[in-house]
Image 1 (cartoon, rainbow, N blue to C red):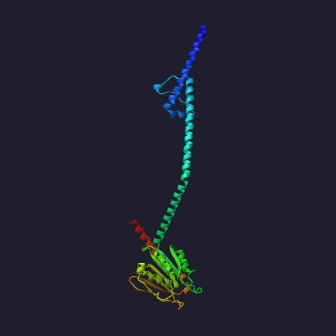
Image 2: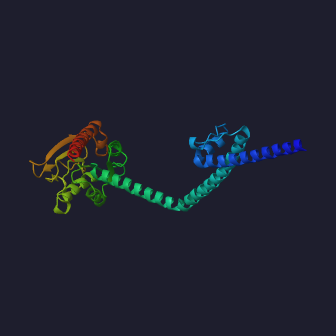
Image 3: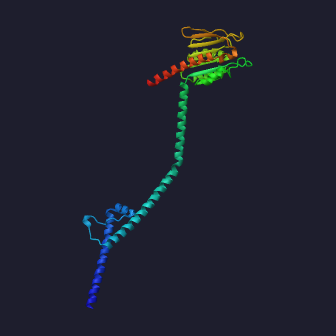
Amino acid sequence: MKFMSMTNDVIVNKNRQEYIGRAKSRQAGKELIEENPKNLLKDALSGEEKSSELPSNKKVDLGSKTKDVAKQAIESMAKEEVLNLAQKGLSTVGGLVSGFLSNSKEKENISNISDSKSEKITNDLKSESAKKSPGIFFMTGFDWWGLSDSSKGGLSEMSDFIDHSQKYSWSDKEEVLEQISKLDKKAPLILIGHSFGGDSVVDIANELNSIKHGFRGVDLLVTLDSVGMDNDIIPENVVKNLNFIGDRELIFNDGPNIAKNVELTTVINELRREDHSGIDNAKDIQKKILDNVDNIVENYGEFLKKEKTHE
């Protein structure tokens, strides 16, 4: 009986010690997590075996069972923390999605406004560029059953070849004046006309030489076998006039031009052997016209470069 009593005491003491040990391990695991929860969570998620050593001021001697219990406590708390983080993450994602959806219309409106502003800026730049471009206007003649039709001949070819040029009929004087009014005052102005178009460009030059149009200058006026009345005197706002006269048809021979002011205007008259309808197709005439246009445009380009460097 005494032996049994001693045995029971030993068992009781042993159980009590294990209980105390388990209690200590639980408490130690709890304190360990509270001391450094982030590292423990990281360790638990990585699955690595880490030492369950406590801070030096709280060290206790933990057996293998105690370490197992501590590990289980850490894993349990880690799983709970992961679950909380997952729930928070879902909540955050949901918020982001909700925010994205709620702001999508606003962003679309902003995008539309941005596109609209971009388009306006582009149009403004194009308009500004058009203003500073040289004004080069070709005016075709009247179709006398093919005798003086320049709408399909050399005049059209030159217009297609020269940048910034525009082609109009001899009757479009008002429209040409409107287009000229949109140009920058410093941009060069070149007027080229054949047959009735030659008469029209002289009329336009005279119209521009008025206070209404600010005495707008004409850098180059080209008249190709002009047909009309009162177009022989070239006004002083014209810098240079190239006048090509056909001598094969008396009815169309309009005669030489004269500068109203020889100190301000240079007039060059040239008698040609081509007929009226073919004078604008002559290669040497086309070359003279293009050379003069190129010279004016190049000088204007240099002027713009200098102007830009001084800004």
